[in-house]
Length: 111
Length: 113
Image (cartoon, rainbow over all chains, first blue to last red; front, side, top):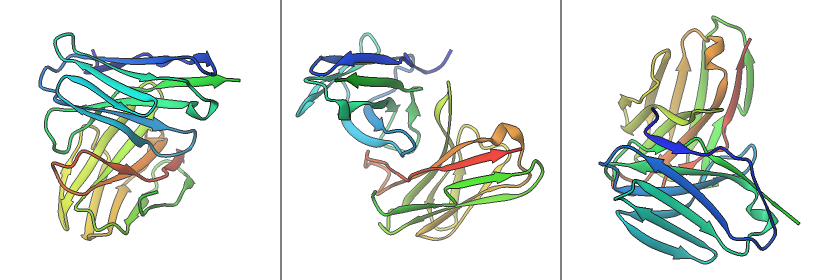
């Protein structure tokens, strides 16, 4: 069993929809939770970072962490075609080196 | 991109040949990483460096070696390439251990035939 599970999709939504992306994990030591966005043939770029449990909002993006359920989510409001990308969750037990990534969810926002 | 250049961007090589991938940064960040990305596996850490001449293994280090003789350069070497090492390789940098944001390069697409 992988430490981090993420539905690979693809997920297709109409423009303007609210998108929910999720990851589950098994390692209770994870404290730092990140979401990366990766466009086709590009490197991942950090979207959101959350420490421990709770919510964090940045523009159209909201990250949620529920450590009791070992479940994290990324919500995208008013989705745009430019949001079409693969979204990777990543976690670490400390602020240190080892990031454990999910396999990524491919999102397509259609006009 | 945050001052990270990977070279080459694409390479096709034959089984059994040595291959070296280069990551060059202009940010003077201390930490540098090599990941590989494969369908169904996501990003997996190969090796990382926490300073000049200071390196350590990641979760998929077998068949790979690294060197860092200067702050700005981190080299990944496949001593004898195998088809299982066909992948997209990403370099990443991080300012320090506690800083959470890792900046990624554009990737190197390696095919071993």
